[in-house]
Length: 189
Image (cartoon, rainbow, N blue to C red; front, side, top):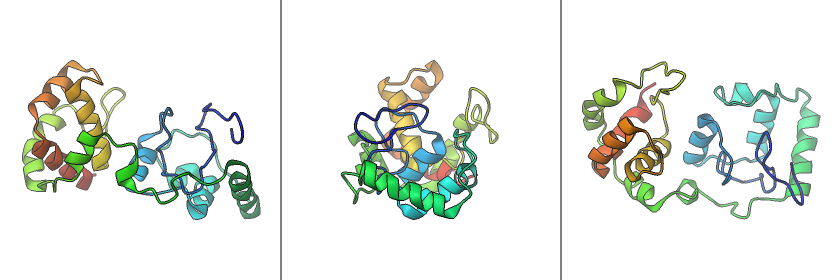
C-alpha cells in the first residue's frame, strides 16, 4: 500500500520508501536478507528498487517475497516514479546504519571491534545447534550481519525474546564476547 492510510499487509507500506533504509520499517517482520542489508547501511534508492523489482530473489536470494518481478524496464521506472510521487521520500534520507532504531545497548556493542579469533574460539557452543545449513527451527548464523546477531543476542540476554537455551547462553556472554562472535559469524558463510 502507498499513500494516505497505507498500512502493512503482505508487504510493508511503501510510503517514504525512496531513501529509506532497507528492512527497517517499524512493525513489519522482514526477511533476514533485507534486515542485514539495512544493518549494513543500504537504502532503497532508484537503482536498488529497480534491481529488486526486476527479480526480488535475484537481488535478495533469501527473501520471503514470492513475486517474480517486473521484467519491463520502463514499467519499473514508472513504478519508481509513482512511489516517489505518491509516497514521497523517507523523512530521514541521510539515515545510516547507526540510526536504524538500534537499541542503545546494541549500538554500544556494535562499537566494539570484535576479535575474530576470539569469536571463533567461542563459536563452538553456538555451532553445536546452529548448523551451517540451518534448519526449520534453528537457523544458521553464518554470514549474519553483526547488527542482526547482536540485536538477537541482546534480546535473549534481557528476556525480550524467550528461549530457555538462548536466554541462558546470552546471559553468560559479556559485550566483548558478543562483539567477537558477531565479527566471526559475519565473516563465515
